Length: 598
Image 1 (cartoon, one colour):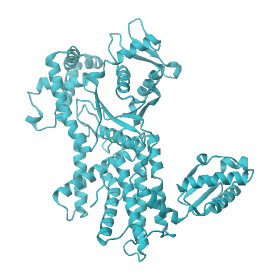
Image 2 (image 1 turned 120 degrees about the vertical axis):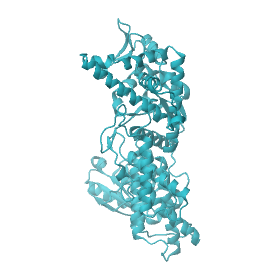
Image 3 (image 1 turned 90 degrees about the vertical axis):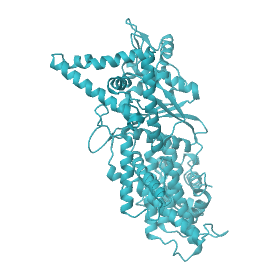
Image 4 (image 1 turned 30 degrees about the vertical axis):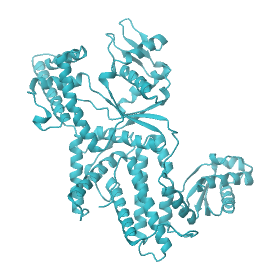
């Protein structure tokens, strides 16, 4: 039986016996005891003062004494600090929990989701440029929250809606037509997404030249930006694409194909996957049917010019255009259609959109419209909003070619990992293949961990140098801790140490650092639940760092192989295995691999 639940049951019995207060065990709230006080779990007595009609210290003392007598196998001691009852568990109980729970393969695999289908949409790149640093945060967040929701018992579908049409795509295409000279990824040796991105930058440079020329000729700047010849050509190309012009369509298909090859290589390198792809070129017209449905229901209204709107002023918002007067879609139209398509395809009543916080308002509007339309999935739409990523050098701009390219950044991180690892001699005895894999594992681990340890809602500064420190609050620190434990387990196996305790053997006294680590391991399921409820991988990232940090305190103070008590030695090896398992499982929820050796 879970000791936490046993304690809740005992507290409920104590409240009834001591103060005639009836409360169910499930409603008893416990929290981890603060580090500056002795205790495993804390019961806050303040909510019961009115009914108990005694001082909070008295409630704590009487309930503590009741529990110590009621479940002595669980409660070793207790202390009361004002209105807080801090309960200290028996050390033998932690030993039992280690073997009965923490080492089990399914430990911290929750069933809260009961197999309910959830779609997580992330990445959503444009096919006119390669992935950049901002995309990395998006991909890592999306993949990680998918893993966390799976661990909570949900059936997760990872989706990618590719923005493969529109004026921005035609900009790359028109620039390629003008100066591409038939070059291809094969002929240039460039990744396809980089090649197409080159022409997106070329378009912007030409546009600026033409705007400057028009301004010099006396045209107002705003008008010049709209009248530049190359922009007019891109707009004409988009119209031809929408009309199905074969030459334009074939070029679009060819260049998008190059980009997809490039994206797939990047996705493979950074370790993210998808179960289903949607393409804007297939979905951008779908929303028009939803608009017709909304007009029939009186949710939308048509104006004299033929445009269709929704009035959300009663909700504290504004009026929103959902269809232009010429019958063309806007972004919200497409999103309405795609939401309906996702539901028809998979029946997901919960859909998570991993999209930057610049689209916060857009998603508020989308959710309101879906609710007004009476869609069965409306309440399950969740915008997992996240802040931008900055570098010490400043903000990134794709059109100007100053964006921090994802592929380049990953390569730099791996190179830095190699340099730091060689400096510290952590690859002695490795084959070249093993060393290369370690550099990739550490470089990607540093990058992912740094981007995931921050609350997704916060804007953040990414510092490549800081992220790869082996001693700081970093991925490599956690990875090195796992490798250190793996070395201990290998040595134990070589020495033939049995991790199991003899039948009936009880260990009654543990080192305080062992207890603090075991208390942390007991919270792993709750941390997974919290991360899933809050859509926050940072909860797991920071929890695993705390486990690794606390384990290293144990490692520095407590002997393992020199311990004379054979049973205690066996326990400590099992203890190390449980910590390694928790670190590995937790890091996998972040999409991060941990090395066995370094």
